[in-house]
Image 1 (tube, rainbow over the protein chains, first blue to last red):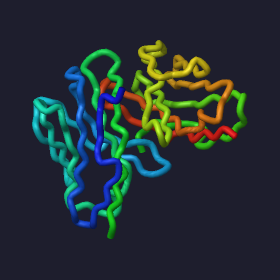
Image 2: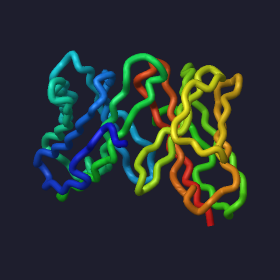
Image 3: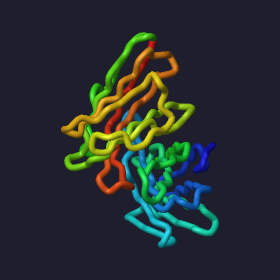
Length: 113
Length: 111
């Protein structure tokens, strides 16, 4: 049972464009939503994260938009660069307990020069 | 660099064999998580240890086991290996619970 649905599976964007990746969750116990960036042969690296008490968080060219009522959140990459080409994973983590994340299936982003 | 180290980087072995993967968490992190990443299954949580004790179990096979030592490093033992066990294995560590930092992974190939 996939509790975090991520789309699209792959995305091709021109340099300078906006990349948008969406995730939807079902479990209302989730209260921390990180995004990870993974380059080939490397481990996932925390990119940006948000809690449901805010609707948007921005760090440089990366923005998370969060819609608590719809149980959806998305990553926007502004002015996408070839160096952003990687696989992006969203995750949802419940409060308390062991903080075990549920990951989306990942989105392979290619930014063409 | 996340501060999490994993060895070895690559491991090639035969079916039926046993291997041990090692992880050293970031300094001060008490929690270690193990994940398996394959092309068709994405990132799958296997097991978590906190300060030497098993805290949570995910989709970990009975052929797999793990432990965390007093110095907080952790080992993942995979036995009776099958072709389908070929994957990337990551460990992650955390101090605050929700923010996890991943190591570079061990690529396991079972021939």
